[in-house]
Image (cartoon, rainbow, N blue to C red; front, side):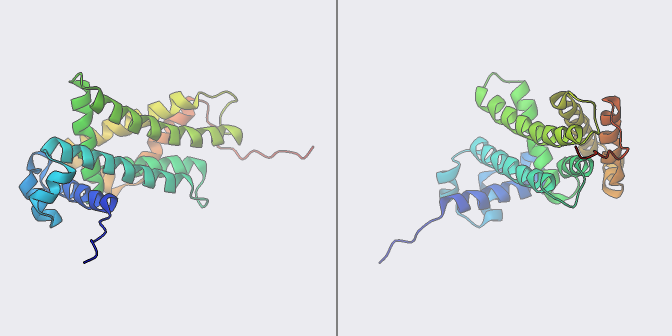
Length: 216
């Protein structure tokens, strides 16, 4: 008999996706080895190999959530059909808890935000710090391109601008998870993230007048 080749990375993704599905439907408290086994179709024995405890399963899901979020941010930032302003708006919209999958991502991020802020465990802090740094970096690159095209004054602090935009999105995500009215507004009106982004950019001197450069 030839031993079956197991794709461990793919199995980790399937397990992490099952955890995220549970988080979206029933919240963090609903994540147990038994429930993850039921949703994923894998036995508790196999789950124990990849995450022997609830905390390990949640950490697996956190890393998967960061991977999925990163993919959506990169896709938006590389979309040549969008302006740099629209790229930032799309990145922010993708970060909001609108819809089943993004609700799961935001719930687990917020869970670990709180955990990292209330513990001395460097593992949680490092995980969240890397995610936030990467997210702000993607936004800052779009801001840099706006500056290069003349939309912002030379020397505009893209890191500060990105941090301000990310802070508004994070705060709104938290409020939306707790407030169904705000959640409905964000779901129904995609122009809301655009208003946040333009407000921050305008405070930094944003000028959306087309700029034409005469050839030398």
